[in-house]
Length: 458
Image (cartoon, rainbow, N blue to C red; front, side):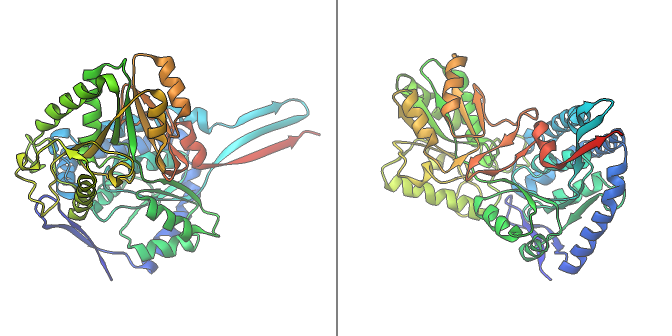
């Protein structure tokens, strides 16, 4: 039997180990979850909502512990306070809209007919959660799935396995089988999905693994929600508020050491603002403090794993060899010794789209900045990617932002902000970023199935 082990990026020590659940045990737990599904779905909606909200409140009650644990598991500095603010916001919104979105849609209720469309829970939902936002990304599906009457099986990332246990503790008051946390290796996940044991699988992670999950599920007719890679761009028009654009886009690029699904990885700046934008960005990034994420003064922690940092180092080295210039001296950040997960911020200019750093997902503290002539060139550059999660436009002209947004191949268009998930709007992507949508009213549509009632009165 293999182990699920978290090697801390803080100091390279083993922080957490659990034996992986064998496939027989996992099958029995999924079977128990399916048995619990019918009774859970029969509970009145208001009761399900109250129980789910209680679970989130329990999680919130130990947020100080969660924040420290996240620093050890994946390197986010404790100064940022964890993820419970977003968790509360998303839970409150999904609870608020549930009654309306899950209610039957009545087509006719006359003396002759009653016709309506109902929504029913899918059954057993598997959530495969990532390490970069181990609570927020999981909650995006867990909360609406449970509220809608599904039962949930959680498989968390090996980098953040303690998050799975914490979520299980928070929902321990639910009826047995309604929420199940399992420690699973890749082979067991493949076996369970391939056997058609789930009614829906939600996965957040790499595009390569998303393709593997599609292959696992082939022929089972299992519903899939896949939020995969990203290479999110920001565009600063000539009429932008420059200071606001610099501050927010730089934060969007380097927050969480760049390990954000919708983090800014490419910046395009209108020619008249380019030089000043770059100058202000350099000044801002130079003030970061790279170090121990448990130190409240640290603003930039290590990446979650050394191999992730090494991948970014290789992208940057390749870009420099092709003529890019690095504007931040890594030696100004002594903690970056090139031997572990600590990586100084990389701000690159003289980049172009022949470079991997401008085409492939980096998922680290690096961003390239390019000069563009006009909106047309900016749109072409922003669309020149196999990904499409979010795009950020900086302008004082709302109509222009809408026009540019209509031309962008992306799931979300931001104006004068970035790196944010609005629970009232669908979290979705195009191209290799995946398929499906979470949160908003669409989140409930994805986690339920329609049933039509055509009742003729004689």
